Image (cartoon, rainbow, N blue to C red; front, side, top):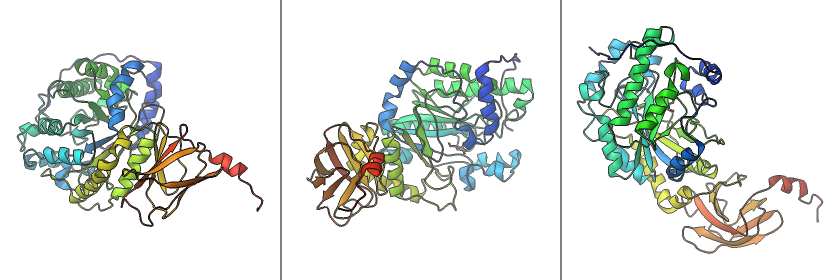
Length: 449
Ligand code: GLC
C-alpha cells in the first residue's frame, strides 16, 4: 500500500493579469513539448543582477548531463510507457518492488560526464510516473522505502561531488501516480493537498541534499503557475538555496528557458536539452543514436549562441549506462580534452554561414570547426575583418592564407581531416570577427573579368 501525507488547507486563489497569459499558454501545453515555452510571462523570484551573478558558472559550464532514471528503466520502453500503454497504477507500481539498481551506479554516470567534458548533471528525482528516488516523508512510493532500500538521490549527489561536478534535480510536477495528480484541476481540496505535497517534496530536495545547483521542473499539467503557487514555491526554494538556478517549467520564467530536442537561442539564458537516441528513459530497442560528431556539432551550435547543452543518458534498470552512450560520450570527451577551453571560454559569435563548419569565438579569434573537412584548401566567404594569423588548433601549427575582398583561403592543409570528429582552425583577426553574407551577395562583381 502506498500512502500519501499532506495537509488540507483550502484557500481562495488570487487572480492576476500575468497568470491569464500564463494559463493560456499552459492550456495549449498539455504535453511537455508544448510547455517548454509556456513561461515567457510572469514574475521572477529574483532580480536581474542576482540572476546574472548566479548564472556565471552555468554559462561557463556550457555542457551538462541529463539522467533519466526511473521504474520505466525496468520496462525499457520509454519513460512515457505508463501513460502511452495505459498501464494501470496498481500494476505499474509493482515495479517499485523489483527496482534495485546496483549500489552507487551513479558513480559511473558522473565519471562518464566528467570524461565527456561536462560540468554539471541533472537527474530525475521524480518523473511523471511519480516514483521518488529521494527520501521523502510524504509518500512510501520512493526508493528508500521500496526494493532499492536506498536513497538514490543521495548516491547521485555523492557521485557528482566526487567528480567535482555540480548537481541539479529534475522534478516533474505532473504526477500519474498521486491520487490528486489529475483531479487537482477541478477539486479545490485535492489541489490543496497536491500542492502541499509538491511544495513539501521540493522543500525536502532543497533541504536534505547539500547545495543543488539547479532545480529543473518539468511538465506542469494540469495546473497553471497560479494553481501550483509557483511564485510562492520558488521563493521558498530561493530561501533554502540562494544560489540555485530554476528553469522555466513551473510556469514562470525564472532563470533559464528549456528548448527541448532542438537548439533555439533566445535573449534569455537558455539550455537545449536533447537525447542521444529518441528516448529519455532507457529504451532497449531505440537504436536511433546520434553520432559523436553530431553531438559535438550540437555543442558548438549552443556555444556559438551562448546557450547550454544538456545531453541525456537513460541508464538501464541496474543503473548501467547503455554501451552506445558510453561509446559516444567517450569520443566526445576525447575531442573535449583538446577543445574544451573553446567551449567553456567562448564569447558570442556572429559568424554562422558555412555548410561544412561551425564557428565559435574568443575575443578577436574566430575558431572554424570543420565537421566536413574540405581538403587542402578551406575557404570562408564574407569575413569582414583582416586576418592576421591562422593556426591549426590545438597544435598551433601555422596555416598559410590569402585574403581577398569577399574570401579568405587557408591553404596547404592535409587532404584528410586531422581530427576524425571536427577539425579546428584558429583565425586571428584585427577586430571581432563577423561575417556579412549580404554584402557578398550584393557586391561581388558579376561581370566576368
Ligand atoms: C518532456 C517529457 C519528459 C522528459 C522531458 C525532458 O517533458 O515529457 O519525458 O523528461 O521532456 O525535457
